[in-house]
Image (cartoon, rainbow, N blue to C red; front, side, top):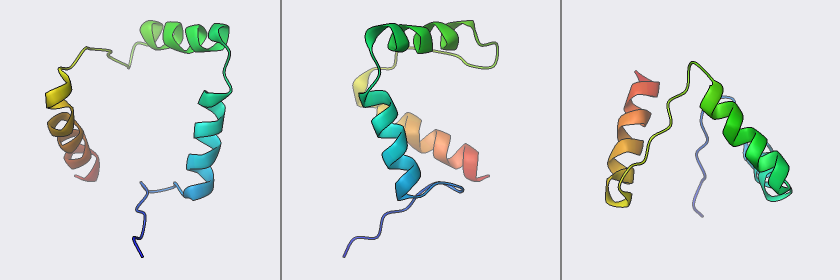
Length: 66
């Protein structure tokens, strides 16, 4: 059987709750989340070509584990 790996502090229940949170948001709540991210001083939003997403994820994973 394939064992799932989670980031430190995460487990299957936390992932399930996060998915449910975002799946149950209405449009106003989604917009509020996006606006909050735009206004956050410690977050950068950018468009990344789809074919580069795996490499970007790998870079982020290496940075977090370092």
